[in-house]
Image (cartoon, rainbow, N blue to C red; front, side):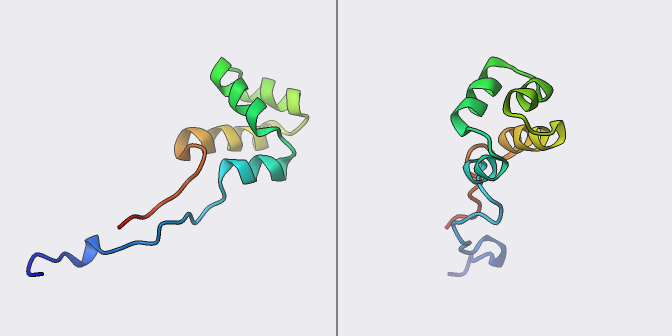
Amino acid sequence: MDNFDENLGSFPPWSRIPSLVEMTAEAGVDFDQLLAGIKQGDSSAALAARFGISEETMADLVNHFWHYGIGSVIGGD
């Protein structure tokens, strides 16, 4: 292993942050309906009104989707 790079070692295949499924459940938002709204291009404000949560919370959920996707698994071998 002469070419071993210590920065490219094995990393844990799990997430350090909750998945979108967990986050929507905690916020009381239906996961499938949220994804349908994002797909339709609904604004965070419209989605927040639909689910009865704050615009800030909804914006966090939508931003999480666009940044991490549905599951935010990091690491790899």
